[in-house]
Length: 108
Ligand code: 5GP
Ligand code: ZN
Image (cartoon, rainbow, N blue to C red; front, side, top):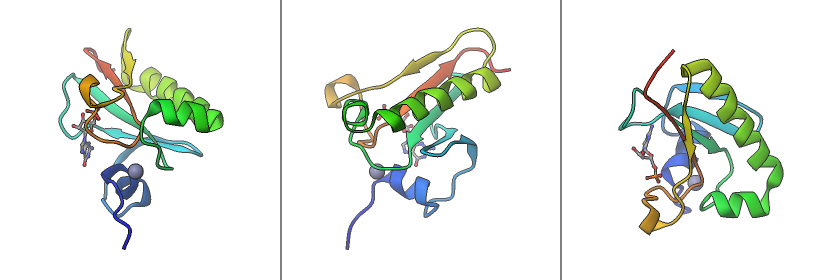
């Protein structure tokens, strides 16, 4: 039987997770171990190993992810935020399903 990664399981609802926002191709939910007062993950519903694979294989989903990140940042943060993508193990990627981190020191 195929083993799904943790973010595929969240996207399919197998692992119940409260969503902060969603779009046609992506979902956003709070990081389980927040490192900032706002720490939200923006994740494509479809499995891509990292953001580079996502950008190269599916510009439409990539654009949708960036737009959802911008919407979530406007709704949840005050002033400034970061939108980051750890890509590869030496860059700190620990879940190998593409995702962006929206982080901010000031929640709305
Ligand atoms: P990475 O280190 O790959 O850039 O980021 C993966 C992030 O996913 C980490 O910040 C980690 O805390 C978060 N994470 C891992 N497993 C889960 C989970 O089951 N639920 C949620 N909400 N976040 C998770
Ligand atoms: Zn996956």
